[in-house]
Image 1 (tube, rainbow, N blue to C red):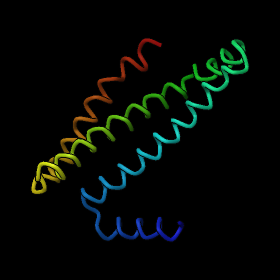
Image 2: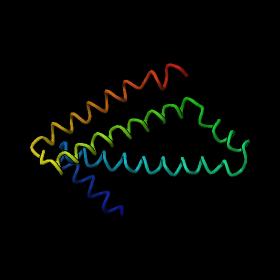
Image 3: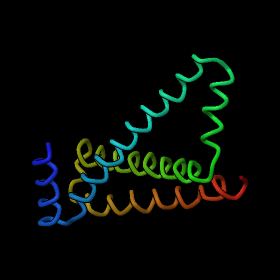
Length: 125
């Protein structure tokens, strides 16, 4: 496994282009979403211990650190979604020649949504 990750690092260094960056970011955001899902299931399982234990578990998440992490989760979901749509467009609709442009469109659309969400995550808390 470590050998494979080393080859990804070497490959990214040799071929630092939009396709490789897209590949890497898609994998990283996917792993982050799986980690979030596990944490989410663990948090919800505290409800089995009773109402007070569940409230204590949820109160831990009401901190500035977790608000930033929620925002990072949104960024991961939004990029993963837009990049996934780019992959579908390239694979299903033959948009291979527009692959680089679509990657930057996915980055720009993600940035617009994530930056536009700042007031909802940080201004009213």
